[in-house]
Amino acid sequence: MPQSRTLLFASLLALTFSSPAPASEAPRLVEHNGRHALLVDGAPFLILGAQINNSSSWPSVLPQVWPALEAMHANTIEAPVYWEQLEPQPGQFDYSTVDALVHGARDHHLHLVLLWFGTWKNGNMHYVPVWVKTDTRKFPRMINAAGEPIDVLSANSDSNRDADKSAFTALMRHLKEIDSTDHTVLMIQVENESGAIGTPRDFSPASNKEFAGDVPAALLKAMHKPRGSWTEAFAGKADETFQAYHQARYVNEVAAAGKREFDIPMYSNVWLSYPPAELPERQIPNPGIGYPSGGPVQDMISLWKAFAPSIDIIGPDIYSDDSAFYREILNTYNRPDNALWIPETGSGDSFAKFFFYALGQGAIGFSPFGIDRTNWTYTGEDGPKLHTENYALLAPMDREIARLNFDGKLKTAVEEPGSTSQELDFGPWQASVRFGFPQPDGRRPPGTSDHHGRALVAQISPDEFLVTGVDASIAFHVPGRLPGMRMQILRAEEGHYENGVWHMTRLWNGDQTDRGLNFRHIGTVVRIRVGTF
Ligand code: DGJ
Image 1 (spheres, rainbow, N blue to C red):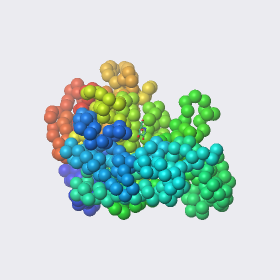
Image 2: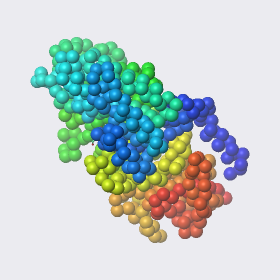
Image 3: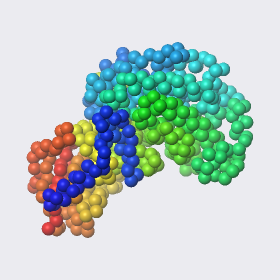
Image 4: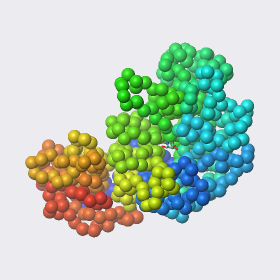
């Protein structure tokens, strides 16, 4: 390619950030043509996240936590902040855990996503302080259809919301004091898998009265429904919609109050609605039993977007490794108004390839759950294996990957049973990906025994690509022609990025390139320049 075209392409990429943010700017989300980026110190950042276990944020436990993050090559730790610990007495705050997390993350060259375990944790209220748990008059519980209080604070109570809001505000004020320059903290998760397990909605007398009346006009408008009662407008989803409406506004008020103190991205994570495996006719959403009612599950995203504008992202926690379900969830939560961010997923090997699916959909980050070696999920030197492979591969070039993805230049291929060859389309160039080795002539690629093959190709200039993969060969060709026909490899450099600069270690040629670029070994990255003749 002529030098002038290379320069033009490079300047176009640079222009994506026409006015780069100053290094002191707080993290923020940006959207361009339906694609999203988390800007950290003015440039896109890819969260290679890892969430620690629920009781691992304590200063006494953290020394055992940090080595696991390092071993995994994560660049970000997700860690809870507990309301019961932060505010042991009303209005008295103890920041020791938050401080230990922020300073520990800095000492270990990590960013931090803090998880506010406030009113809700997994559809219950287990992290609220004792003074909230024991004062049920002031801090009312949800009431189930039988008229009994349950183990969930009511989302329909101003005093519950205001108590949470005041604690969350104190947390954000403190973060502003300690982190407005360093930006160790990237984002805040407001509540954890919010919603009610035990009832589809609040059946208190006040809520029943409200439910018997008309649906608020703003909700009808947002959901494109005609005037009417809750049951007329929402039929079988009336209870859940009622709860989601109240809960989204509750969480929004908490988030908005926190943002007034320190304006960094905030998100809600989701306990999804999983279809039961057995019979198709049982695949009916079961709010309050199958998943917490009121949360931003698949059907409630639009409602939450309308009534919780201070929540920037709704991020699904994905604990099924059923590939069709996983991909459906990525599609559902990847929207022009919602950056794709997976705050929790399984740490097992069967979940690792989904990181490549997520990247292919422009995800800003990904985070397996429960990675610390505190004798809960892992002990000794044990830890996630394939997630670690992924992070080790991408960590040295995480900024480059984030930028190329935001610019729409990155594509991925992932092996599935029976699908061992795939095409990636870059217009004038295509990449044929073939999974598994050996790949003898006259045979289809064999795939891998557990279907873990994965590949990533990013276009760095019109004829130049950054390529990597695991158990994959990748061959470039022009559309409608085989590799080598009217095209050739001009240069294939194996190497790595270091602080944004590419370092070549050797050229690939011969057996390493004649049947595609062969990624048999983990951790290899190639920059290839191709040309036509
Ligand atoms: C999802 C929750 O959000 C986490 O805090 C943790 O409880 C995991 N489930 C356990 O699998």
